Image (cartoon, rainbow, N blue to C red; front, side):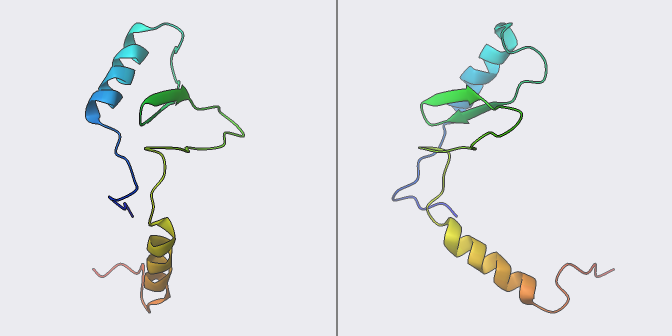
Length: 83
């Protein structure tokens, strides 16, 4: 799904910084969902949230990957356990 020429990765250090902030800052409380994107983060609203957008929150090849998955789903026997 990722197109290295246009997509940006969220670095592990960025995620770690936000995780530490969640542990140290009382404003997050229990149960907060925090989205970490490239160079920014935000608390995800519990309803009507627009979802991720911007660097680190999107992938360039999502349409091609979606088409590939739907082709797999058309194959006979897909999803049937083979015990």
